[in-house]
Length: 114
Length: 112
Image (cartoon, rainbow over all chains, first blue to last red; front, side):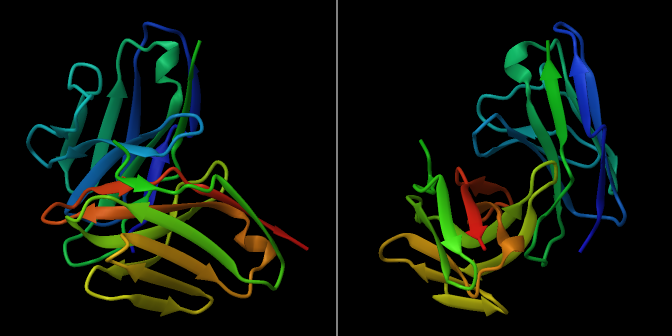
């Protein structure tokens, strides 16, 4: 399975600022996803990152707040914009190749907004 | 609307015994189910999966059972080892899509 490098692993940010999280996969993958895990909660899908086109967002998540880029088949970024303390969560990227059943996750970014 | 539910937030099992983690779902359009294990400060690690057309899948110490009529799946770990202590998530894939829906997780503690 693919290996995902995610960075930063953690950050403490001031409210009102933005943070960009990067995920690099060691091979070309068909699909990439971004999840959020709020404290004590499950993983919630934010969006599917589409190569060369706009991401597909889940209900409750919007592009202005969580802009996503995927310039090629091995790399994606998620930006958390205009942060508030409610954005304090773990953010994870994931990948999947068509025909392969396992989804691989990055190690996560623990974000604290103060 | 929680489509995938893990009703036990925690489970404690003695080393060497069987650990059984449970998961219920409500959406009949799920076609694939997966179990993940997560250690603190790490991303979830894929453990085992099962297609909706099967009722059992086994991989070493891990076995997943699927009861479609009850919309229930379970993960059996036997024998349990201290390294199995982690949070376990069940996840389901929506038929025709590639995205996963996760349960809330169960924290498993294996006691020596």
